[in-house]
View 1 (cartoon, rainbow, N blue to C red):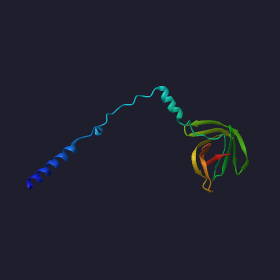
View 2: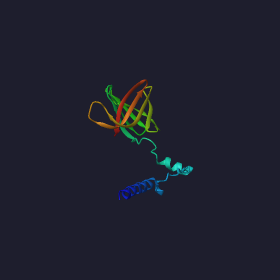
View 3: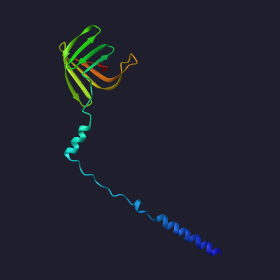
View 4: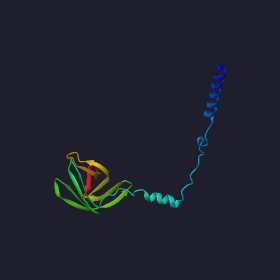
Length: 151
C-alpha cells in the first residue's frame, strides 16, 4: 500500500509538471508588424489637427510693473502708456505668429518696440490677479516682462 501511494504521488507530480510546461496557443510570442507609412494626404490631415499657434485676441492689454508700462492693443494699433505719459502714444503694428508665440512690432519715438506674447498663466507680482498671457516687452535695448489679458 505504501508503494502504491508513492507511485501515485510521482504520477501526479509528473502530470503537473507536464501541464505546467505546456504553452497555450495564446501565450505564443506576438509577431511584430510594421504599420504602413501614411500617405501625404493623411499626413496633411494630421498636421491640420495641430493648433496653428497662440489664439491671441485682437484686443488686449499688456502691462508691466517697476517700471510701470501698459500697451493697449486694438488690431494693428497699439497705445503705449507710462506714468509719465498717461495719454500714451499710438503706433501701427505688424503681427507675426511664431508657433506658440505672437510677436507685435512697431516704431515708438524712433525706437523698435516689440511685444512677444505667449500663453500664461502670469502674475504681475503686485496683485492676486492671474493673467492668461505672458509678455516680453523690448523697447530699444530695454527689455521688461509683463502680463496680458483680453480687453
